[in-house]
Length: 218
Image (cartoon, rainbow, N blue to C red; front, side, top):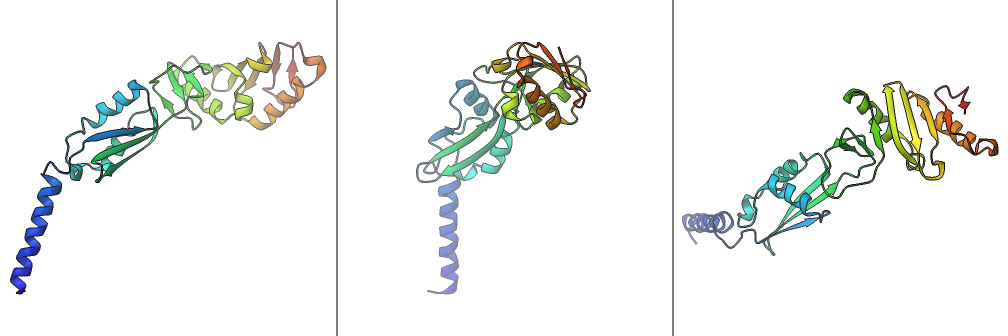
């Protein structure tokens, strides 16, 4: 085959593939599948961000760009978008943030990220503070607490960024713990656990570990 003919055939094939992938209705999105979320509100929020993908050309779907767009939603920790040429579908995988506390009408996850609630309500401890800045400090402290200790906290309040108080539910129902500032967290928790384990402290209503080397029990 002459060289010029080979070039023409190659160009013809490239043009045909370009048309087939970019313009033909053969490779268009027939279906969008969601993984990781089932709540209708959450799915609708993602759909609103990415637009209607059904009918779009698969070749024009940019997975990385769509992923970045989806991850601008504060309640999403991670997203991934993939195309399937055989089924003409797009799969959107979403990992929602899991709330561990609520502050100022918003949620906080275990990484300390603050996000807007969306989907079914979650029963989590309320973090109360006089200003948003102090509320953020409370949220950061709460997120750093060990899960086995944090799980029994019903609410947490802050007078300022150096004075935090926790109210317990669960096995320590009704007990108030004055924690003080965010320093010496491990020592304060160790002192607290040692004090509540003492038989003579079974009926106490308040423990103060703000100065962990000189705790107060009332």
